[in-house]
Image (tube, rainbow, N blue to C red; front, side, top):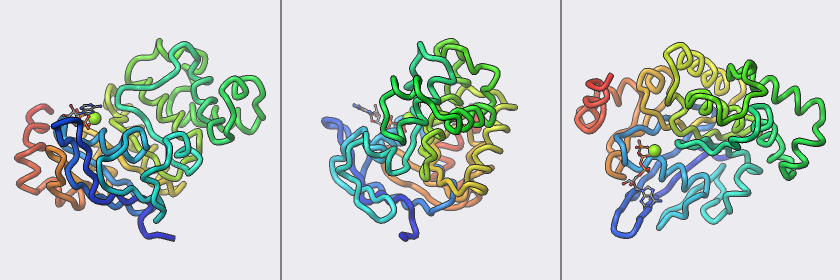
Length: 253
Ligand SMILES: Nc1ncnc2c1ncn2[C@@H]1O[C@H](COP(=O)(O)OP(=O)(O)OP(=O)(O)O)[C@@H](O)[C@H]1O
Ligand SMILES: [Mg+2]
């Protein structure tokens, strides 16, 4: 078993003349929460999109458990235990909260979503109900996804990602739109997923209160390039990070 569940090696992504990610490396230790932070446009979501195989890197490699998945189709990543949420939400707006998570649960079994909603074993329904409870969405079970506020839609994406029982969870700004009380609940949930269930989490987030509280390691991107990496304490006190990002975040806060 490789020490690192995820390794990104020398990743470069170019969009025409723009280099969004430049020779970036990150190694995510199994069973940890690893945050990827940096200013707007730094290349965080682009990196996520390469790992989840939505974007093809210009150069570089992505290894999952030591296996090169750089050319794996996105549709196969759930089967390998990789789940993600999207910065800008990719829900089925017309379906209910319950149905959205149910679809996630069936991706693993390779079924279509028509099958997912018609024939569902009780164990799957129980699993989905439990996820709705854990993400604080039980009260919205029968609401149409599009009628939830942004924060609850983000939580629904998290519940749907968890439905595939991932070993690697890629979260793109899960705390966006959440109130302080909800951020505290998210903090507890992510910590629990990591500590009790051994799920490895790569977390992109601007809410520093969450990042600094739960991450084992933090990597900082700026203009597509890694500028720092270390414990939350080390990164928080790094002058290049303060200059490029945290100084501005503190002013915003
Ligand atoms: N599909 C695309 N086509 C062209 N340019 C893109 C595309 N996706 C991202 N970019 C550009 O790549 C750069 C990195 O964007 P990215 O979305 O990865 O940043 P980010 O770190 O996630 O920022 P934010 O914190 O605002 O979400 C930006 O300059 C962005 O405009
Ligand atoms: Mg982004």
